[in-house]
Image 1 (cartoon, one colour):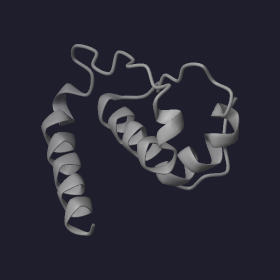
Image 2 (cartoon, one colour):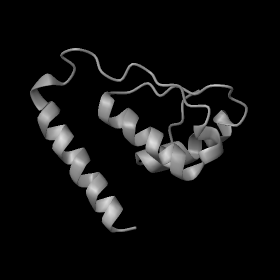
Image 3 (cartoon, rainbow, N blue to C red):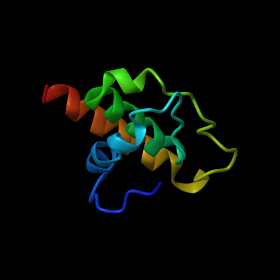
Image 4 (tube, one colour):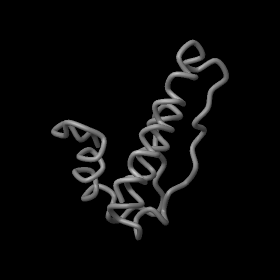
Length: 86
């Protein structure tokens, strides 16, 4: 199944929920940083479905190596901002 209507990750998770209702297990297929965000959003939107999450292999050696420090900083700042906003 492919959800193609969303404009961002939060919407993608929300619009994918009907596809996940009967799933016995859920694995996120994405890069390290995006997969972490998707798991977090699923936990916030549907904690009951988040229980079905299985950890996929997020990190592939060399994946995004040149920009990984920048992405890590971006995700850290994003998480920090989200925590401060409640």
